[in-house]
Length: 403
Image (tube, rainbow, N blue to C red; front, side, top):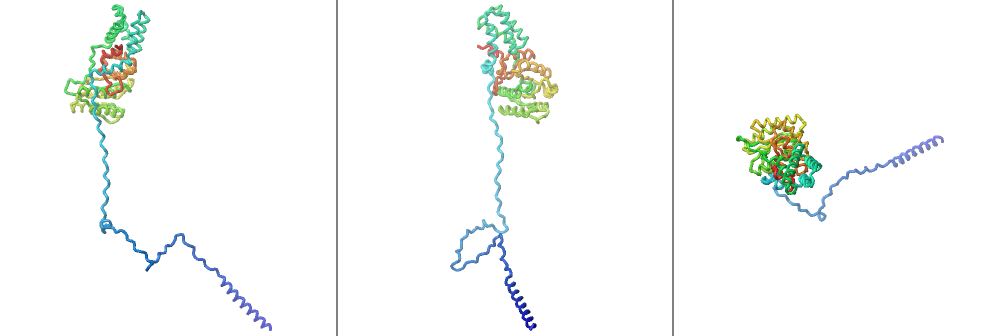
């Protein structure tokens, strides 16, 4: 009996294990399908046949030239031609204004700035009683106009004597009297022509000197116009090598009237440039060589010595025909100090007074001539290219005292 129960139990256990295995195997986890890839897979579509077939599309056919033969490279396209830079335009030559009577034509401009002196003197001389106070006022008027102490004293003494002796009291008589005395002070016997003719078979050589800011380079360019207007051929020497702008400015002045400019490297030796300018002027058969020097303070000994060197080097070709000192008329008596120093270094032969139309101190003409013993030869009366005029004492005095 016990054996039967044991057998039943074992049988039950076996049956239970089989059932459990079946259940577990039946519950095994099913595998999930793989996750879709981020890159879509393109499955080529199967071609359609029969009625579903798509009609054949006609594609444009290429010619042999377009397709190209095998092994033959298509010719490379030619690069577009690069346009060459256009040559700088040559400035048209200008015809300078004739020099004859130029100061007379500019008389009105001069009279506007200088009439104070002349009218003031005439007003004082026309007083009924020419007492000591009046003569002192006349002296003050002349000194204020930068005539200078010594020339002023001489003029006043001569006027006093002539008025006392002649008894001239009419406005016309006083104007004539004053005109004569002013002309005496200015000097009518000076040779005021700019010397541009050499005694030998070489060009006339003119050197232009002066202090910074007086207008040397501009004066040199305007002088070239004066000479060209008189039918002379000119070569310019840009010996102001310290300022590139000065060289360019001088060359521009020359190009306007057809005058060639000889220049050197910036900061180069000014004497070398001046020497070369004269050399080329001789080779070209030019009539005149104008040399523009660097502006320098009269107090700088080294710069003044260099100016003397330029003069000595140029004179190896022959003597300088003219050395013009450019002075600013508005500087007054300070211009006399500058003039003295320049005269000690180089032999000044003539004076150019610039900006004479911009000052009421026209008496500087008298003072500088008396100080240096050399004449004023040219005057600047404006910024125009033809506003440089030969100095004419008669026209100057007429502008001072009016008609």
